[in-house]
Picture 1 (spheres, rainbow, N blue to C red):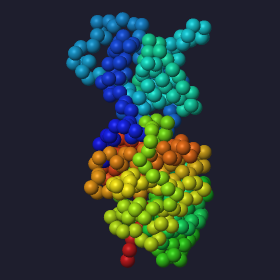
Picture 2: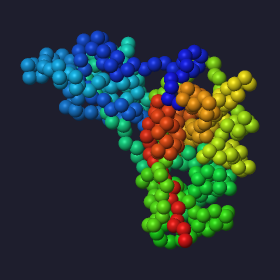
Picture 3: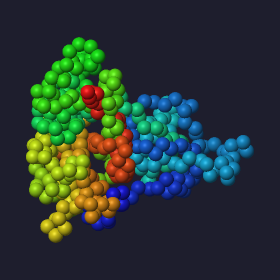
Picture 4: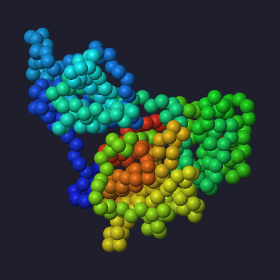
Length: 396
């Protein structure tokens, strides 16, 4: 499912410059080989905009190389490639005459390098600089994800997959959905950290257990990074990877769509979806269509002649920090049509659907050992945000 989509129509993806092409472009236009480093990971959200001290970026323009700094062939071969569009960078560039200082820096996302160098800062400010005015460009690592951002995304995701019943118990969000999906039948520590009930003292654990027991279920905890830990002796599941991206960083398809989007899953959609390889229970439709203060949609790729080739669900919800997210779930490609790029197409279309409804960011939750799915989402442009795992009490 990592094949590139076929050209034509909305599903023709604009090809980004390769690293080698970017480096060659800089050498040709700027007239020098840039002294840069690279971190291939795109930023998770917006870039940082703080000023960078002048000694943190090496100047490459306007100075002649000395014998001591002349690069040997072997050293040139090991020089890191230039940053690619989509990566987080710091750029030093010349200011026009009249400014009190000749140079300044900006940290943000590298949007393009041709015909001008464009960097977008966290506050939305876009800086466009002619290549001959760029003094240095250096790739940076992905911006660290703050704990508050993890909580905010998890709350948006909980609204996008709320189950059929929800409640708050001592700062823990509890959800129930007649046992369909672990995510919709678990308790998560998503309330205010200062007032979150401790599982090791007080009545929180007993109240959580009682709530699920009243619904014929045992207690399962959903524990995101840095938000909660399992009690001693509890069993933890393999990790689930949450991947995310600023939609503005993605190259989404244009043109006529081959995806049909509906407010409720059609019979063919339901027959294509197999949760953990098993047929859906009777309660599945009510869980799939549930959304809290948002919008949900179901995409199907195919037609009367081909049948349904791929499906996906998308939900647009708003996080407490004001970001609007479109979450992808229930992504599945019919077995005879896998590894042909159809998963990429259906996901891109559902992100586009969310963007048209005000979403600025997108996320997906995938088991951390599902290498094929993770490769698909990385190709689409999503990057690691955080992880969570499920915890259950010991039996017996």
